Length: 109
Image (cartoon, rainbow, N blue to C red):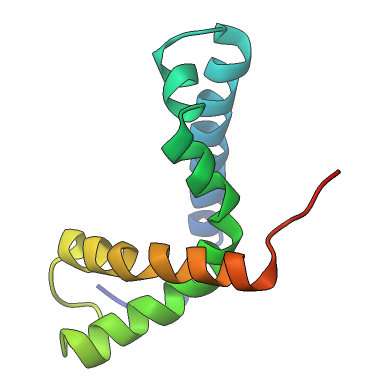
């Protein structure tokens, strides 16, 4: 793995793949009606995660850096991705919920 210059097509390909995946997920819910995916995304846990998603976005990189460096003591770009993801989310989600509660979240109506 190299951290050298990025070829022009790499970020373009990454963005296109993200767009395709997001479009397929959203389109299936919007156009599909009441399927399993629609019920899953409309469930209370998923709606709750959606409500704190901005706080998760704000905190996850900081928490991941702390988990890698302080908790697990792993050098950069090493270790188990699934273990890092699980531990990061285990810490990030309660912290995001607390931040959401303290800052009042988004108030509508």
